[in-house]
Length: 421
Ligand SMILES: *Cc1c(COP(=O)(O)O)cnc(C)c1O
Image: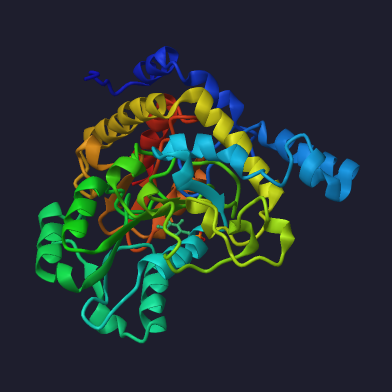
């Protein structure tokens, strides 16, 4: 355990000792009007741009300029198999085997595609279990799937709430609901790192509980991918989805990732929505054969993908491979721990950290609840050069990102918070 100190010189010392400190210079830090960089603590919402992204996209523009359609085969990175160039690195980031991971579509789209295959309600087993504080898009997605199958969300959607006066969900409450209603639950679909509280759930445990009752289990890892060690393969989950523009720094609206566990890789009976990009690569252009799915999650691909967006993902994943997920996570534990320490040092009883105190139950993010605050406080913080994230009614979410945030950033943020509160 590092003994933290509440001084700028200590923060600077920590930065000096940080073996990942050079990575900050590989990113564009947004600038304030005065020309100084913002303290950017919003990488959980939109990750910063790696400086290598521009060249990666320009390469594809150049190849399109020079080759036209021939770029599918003759581009420096041929477009036909382009998604395959991302698979290995993305699989490493989420702890999965390459056959289990593909980059395609966007998160909410992938969530629907996964539910087409893994939410197969029957009269007896038709429920979906989700956390009450789930991201709105996830709730719309599960509720609309329930309705699509002719069921009623008021009966088929179980929304798990934290206990009165608590913000995070207790594992024992998840256990209890699966125990009580497991036989009626068709799908457990939980945000593995909750976007609001920052709580990180033990996916392996939840999956085991669900499978023991015959439920399918999937996770939305939007706030987990590139942030925590997901170990998706070992979790045993049936599927997972995530986006690449938050912790994965791949640009606004960039493509999402999708995981389907290896146990489903060769199952040709699984119902799914099909498109030509999921078809056997050898005969894809034959155009006349019946659908012959590629083994693994690639079978869920529908369309030929947007290469310009994939180029940004490729550039970003290269940075991740260079830094190493384990190293990043190690730094994140200390960096977020330092943020927590400084907030506690403020000793202000209007402030409450609603994110779990246990580093194993959270990623980078801390969600700070400020009693009787409104958005004015947040606006003042922004005015003072901090980019964070405000959630009504009273929560500031801050995420120091190990790739580009420093201990000094964290120190200066708390300094600003202290003067504005
Ligand atoms: C960011 C986020 C989304 C966004 O979905 P898109 O389809 O990428 O727009 C969905 N769910 C969760 C949990 C998120 O954090």
